[in-house]
Image (cartoon, rainbow, N blue to C red; front, side):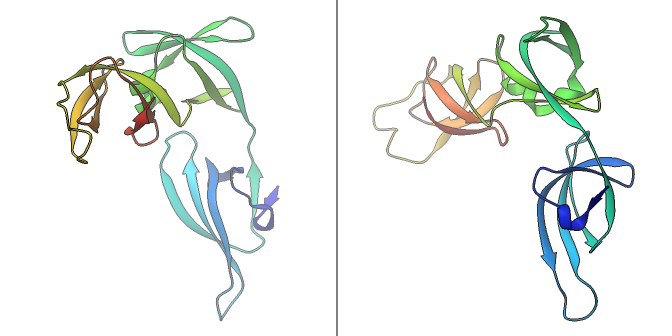
Length: 185
């Protein structure tokens, strides 16, 4: 059992029979009454975030979350196929467990499969990755001065807003959490 005094960022707990990860917490002592713990929790299966307040000293069950290195092989219909980097065993994962990560999966890319007590719950990729622009309108000399953007298509087919000077074939860094252009690679 884990008490509110044991809270730390990244801790996985069970709240009302649902698995959550603590992303932020703060001990708060109001002028009247006992201390409380304000917490932001991310749902491990659904990905949504909630804010909750717990009384000081409340107890929670801890959860065992493990990570395994996988390599993305290919997409087949609505399923994504990965290979375990240690056992070379192949697994097929449904698109709903991949979510927006699918926009940034390139063949032979190394990822981490996240397991909640032996159940695959999601696939994690690095926060910043390098990708190639597949389609973009050509840039014009002098376009690097302004802060205007245009639409471009990545090698995976995902659309992204990029500065006007980016052209087809350029390699760029993309923030996978927001889907935003970071810089030229």
